[in-house]
Image 1 (cartoon, rainbow, N blue to C red):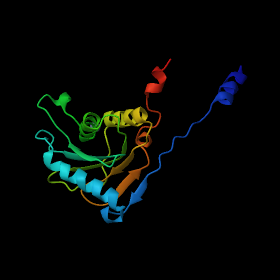
Image 2 (image 1 turned 180 degrees about the vertical axis):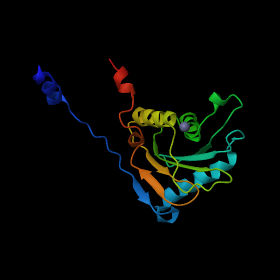
Image 3 (image 1 turned 90 degrees about the vertical axis):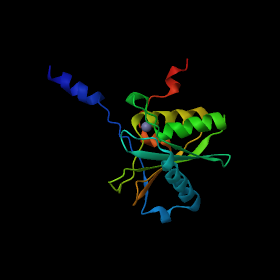
Length: 173
Ligand SMILES: [Zn+2]
């Protein structure tokens, strides 16, 4: 009987999922194109409609054709209808530039009365959508994250934000 437990341990396998993040000390340390993209995300904050949370989020997307778009969070009195900045800008790109892949997305936020000193990162729903867009176009999307001040996190692809995520591949027959 004691061998049963041993068999269980014999077939056990451990999978380690790793995410790599490049950390830049500040905005000035970024390559010019990345700095411009983060600036664009910052400017998008002014169009945030966030009267309920007060948490303003801006996102900017650079497409492979060089086009740059901005988006911001759009809240609603019916809270579940609130739209995140990331999904707003991805949807805008999908209708304005259909079929064009995104190469980078910058995300930042501002919360009046509290300085955001750490990079902010997308919610789970936005991570799922970012991964879908990557898969749709067969192109990875670099992700740049920043708060009000301080370090900038750069991830090589959206998939790094969602290890073991659900993808459309499983629905293929
Ligand atoms: Zn989100």
